[in-house]
Image (cartoon, rainbow, N blue to C red):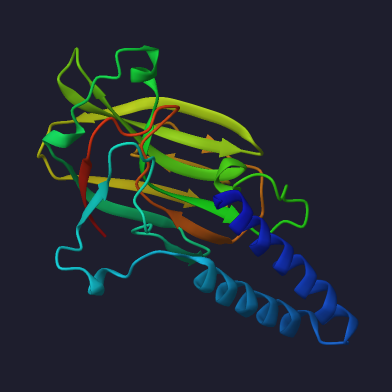
Length: 224
């Protein structure tokens, strides 16, 4: 469903650019109109629930058997973001054991995906082509939450551990995007070069998996 939604966004962006070029508008005007249309489509297609409609908006919940909240939470559109951050608290529901090698899979908490290339594969979610997220997983051995970089560059994935945090410990998470140096930096870790020239992006939200869905209800506090 995610890949379909963002495939529609990419197709709309490309089609609108072609139409605006044909009617003789200046490049600057075409860019402004296409971006406005793209933003509008993203808002319409995004099923995220606004925080102000919720009694306890900082807490995000994934139900047992799901990969992500429904409706989605803590997502939205971004234009030329240089940084995204949030203070995140993992409570005791984030302790789990999948009894398999999938315990090593990274879940995701905050991040972004870039949209805007006419060559975007409509069958892939843009954040799995060009995007950066913070990964998290429970370590039974260390009895702590491990945090890592989870990045796609041109469809190629890079992931590695950067830090740890304790259960119920508020932790500031940050992803920086340097367009001059063309690098992502996740949690202050090793810089990861990227190759795209995209500036339109969307925020990704809490996700469990990996392969397996949440084994029980998962709650994470995310304060933007």
